[in-house]
Length: 393
Ligand SMILES: Cc1ncc(COP(=O)(O)O)c(C=O)c1O
Image (tube, rainbow, N blue to C red; front, side, top):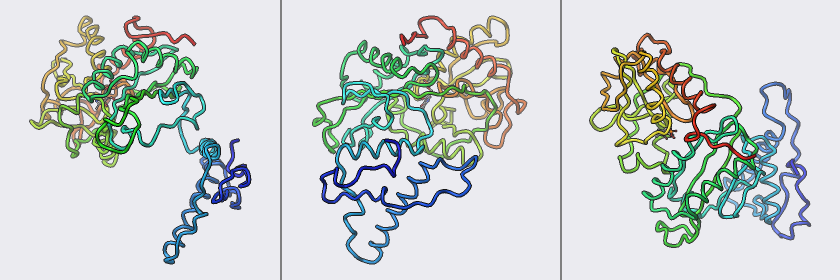
């Protein structure tokens, strides 16, 4: 079942209040519908939701009791059908290939079934941690390194594991296997789990593991970007080093950067030193060709940044870099650098050509950022077994 208008008749539900308003609503076909228009399913969905919202607004503004049949009471199978219809509407822009949930204890490849319980404390209290690993050419990149950070984050967040590390790893690999995805990303969460709506996690007796595989055939492009110094307060070190789901400061930093014509925002720490970006680390190449990255003490220890530090040794060997250091970087030093770059698993290495109103270096993508991008990409494609796990599809 893939269409709103094909929802079941009320008799099948056995629920008194149920009325399939979506099925009964006559929606005019969208004019045009050419390139760039939303898919028909999505238009139908939006129109039906808008009509339902208007009905309840009219009733509310007229001071009347809202007609209870505006909001249908749904059986489990009707909810499932509507989730399928939502999926078919095209409202989601990405390809979700497989999801694992320890709550249902298995993997589903049906995106409409990829849900988590609302009373999971990760949803309403932010009591969860997460991580992401890239999938490239049928291999999972740096899974061990991401798992190290994931489990450390869980420990810091006082989240019990639903099972041990090797089982978690096996579940993640099996989820990628079931997805048949050969290029994309694997995202996973550990949560204190569902149980109630309290703050304490004492009532959560089933810590949960969730994972999802997202297909993305296109690779990041190392094009130059602008960054903006963030006005959003940075997380305190205790929370910045732990990859927990409280990413509102990160999301607002990204939005602020975009609102100011940039790719993202950059945080400075209390002493004015460069910290990190919204979801990436930052690196610089000084005038004397030294690669410098801020130390990881008070920021997230990026798996990509650490791998870049290893791989950059090759550029020291061939003379393109004079050295590699992690240390404090002042704004003044950063803005005077020959090159600046963002580093993270979503973007790999992205050159920064403008920071606030200041051009960085020549104002063009620098050769070291490009070389580091190529090195990481090459490592993802043919690096050693310590960074690549083959998926047994
Ligand atoms: C705040 C923050 N810093 C840095 C990074 C880069 O980490 P990684 O290279 O492991 O993706 C991320 C990535 O998620 C992040 O969220």
